[in-house]
Image 1 (cartoon, rainbow, N blue to C red):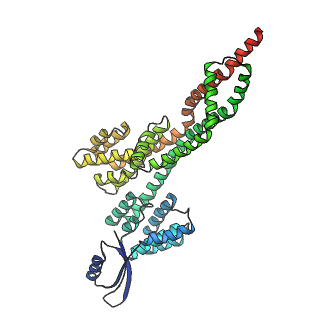
Image 2: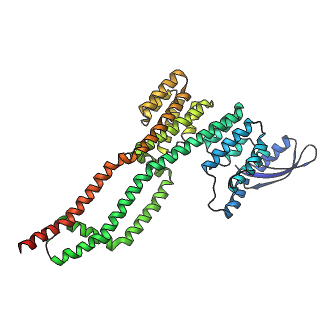
Length: 409
């Protein structure tokens, strides 16, 4: 929707300036007139958060608002509102105590939007990259029910939990990726530097080499001859992968596939289910209808595959089906989650039981990460054993044959 700045005179004849979204300048003028103000000048402009943040980013290209900033904002808003501090004064205090300039500028923009007549939820919605739709919806519920300070405390815990589970997933992936990278580097070193040295020795004997040795030497020669092209192919693959992951189809395929990765996949699934349960529990606790809650949670589980399953759940609930039936039909929820949903629906305490599911999977993910190394070690041992066997057969078999030939002569 277009954004306009305006100048008008109120009923007392005083000059009033402000900014507001409106489909057209004419409709904004009509709105001002109905409000008792006479519009003098109306001009279309960029929203203040775009211009101000863009100017600041010219000086701080890498600056951005982090999840920690959102956590602290939620906690501080809860404390200030609970103490009876007016909203405008609370935001002014947060602006002055902001950890860095970018977040201070964001809070300043929120103040300006509130001064222009918007509610806090509407102001937060203009910063969609910082405050997601779930966060904005919860603040809107708090405004409508008069429980805004409680909502901010719940959101602080929600954002903290989301950050914790995100860090846990990164930890789950970091160790396997490091091991795979180390193995890839070791194979490159062996094929580029080690095998060519043995190949020169073998050629000096002018003898027939075993098939495994021929294959190793051929692959080594191929890598030595084409390494620039291979490096270029790897770089192109990385760039292409990132481009594909930015698309809806690519992101969906990746989010679905990564849940099937051995060992790490089940940890990521449990972390995703924990995020779902925690977010859904908060939505139910705040009084958000089930259909709207599922729609909001689908946007914050950070997995497009699971998110689409939640959208199908929402459609089923809209048709009159039970939450348990729709959850079962998705095929992604574990028996623990399904059992809790069943009991929660029957007892009317779905929010409490979903919170228990989140706590359970949080502890389970922590335990899985602590034992991750022990789970991966057998796979690594087998993989390393295969590599060592291939190298041993390829390198030492011909040396063994040459040794036997030398003894006979």
